Image 1 (tube, rainbow, N blue to C red):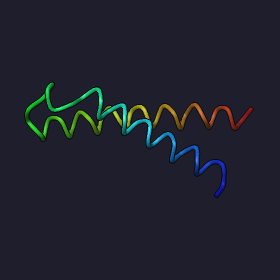
Image 2: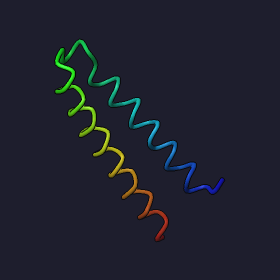
Image 3: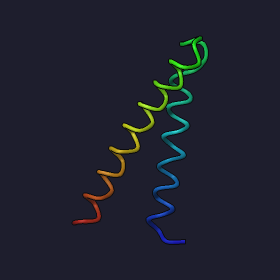
Image 4: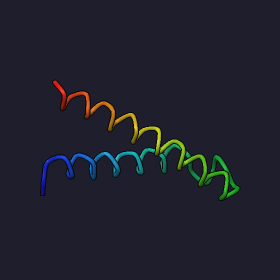
Length: 59
């Protein structure tokens, strides 16, 4: 596989793990609120990571 796909897969795995650990069922009992917060946190980390890696690629 290409290196960039492996980086994106690793970044996705890390963001999924972080959002699952930070926002767990003990923090929010409502599953819809938990889903929305996990999605927002995961997307923001993933987008920031992609932005960072694209800056590294340009250099």
